[in-house]
Length: 214
Image (cartoon, rainbow, N blue to C red):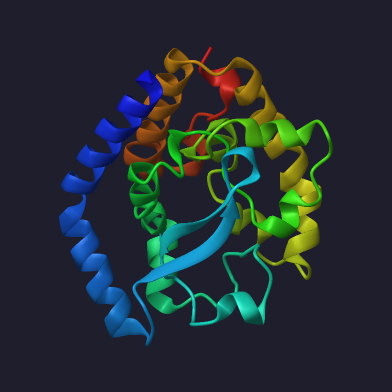
């Protein structure tokens, strides 16, 4: 109950504060390429229930039919303005709407597409026992998935080999040890990563994983 109240408060404030950004990004998307402002994709949520996740559209229309769900930074499906939106992580802002709807939490394991959930081991299925979130330990560890996949001949294979194992290990760690205090630590660290670390030279950026938070 407390977690849900925190989610509602944080999401409401985030949407209110970022409303001017919503307007600017929406206009830029419409001017840059034809299609809707928001991209909706099926993801798997709490207890395996599917839902539609909201994101600002950063790719061409029907991109999900052209390629797979993993997107490299150099993916040709990404629009010109989409690259900027992704670089600044603004594409994730509409997910606060998913939080208000009760489909997501501010903090929790990132929701996967159905085809990836179908590959979960029995142990990994425990990830579905908590509401998926906008940020978690894995989000802070990865920071920029597109950069990791950039240049790969097979982004799906690279995702499964280089990102999937550690991402799910950190997700399971959250599932097994989550608390309101842990959530607050992750929220604070997420703000630090996006508002402070982003502008530091890469060599000066602290490592943003669980071990750096105590």
